[in-house]
Image 1 (tube, rainbow, N blue to C red):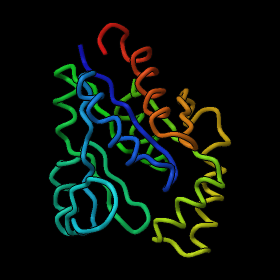
Image 2 (spheres, rainbow, N blue to C red; image 1 turned 120 degrees about the vertical axis):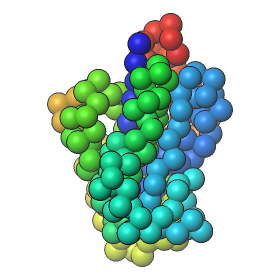
Image 3 (cartoon, rainbow, N blue to C red; image 1 turned 60 degrees about the vertical axis):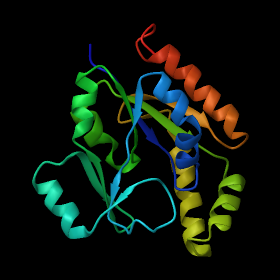
Image 4 (cartoon, rainbow, N blue to C red; image 1 turned 135 degrees about the vertical axis):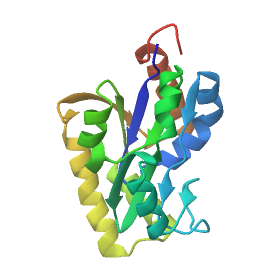
Length: 190
């Protein structure tokens, strides 16, 4: 039986990388692979545990079918390696740090994916964005407006989405994610 693709989305600063890092070991125990995205930024860039490559190499991998999913956002290219298809066929579950803007394409390829939307209250998000220091004031305000859009819909692309609040304690968020996965991903298999 095939594994499930778990498509994690959330606004920048919602804590996707922190959640993934905190849950990684427990996800592995549950037969869930956490995918490292390929991103067109240097490996020295602060942020998620991604594979940094040049734009040229990204475009070449994309042309050659090296990505199961790929998209552009914020001036960068993002790719999910094609290996996830093998892992899913082997019955392993796969968690990807996805993009709401690319969600329709992900659903078109993986019809039965499980969607998780990580949300965060605006005051918490503002503090996180200010602390990381990557965005100026106008960019932070734009991200806050986008966060409001993230939390407005009950579904995305007509699919039910599991909403996971990460405004408080990260350990609680991890626990809620794992509890939901145990119930949602073919009960008895995870």
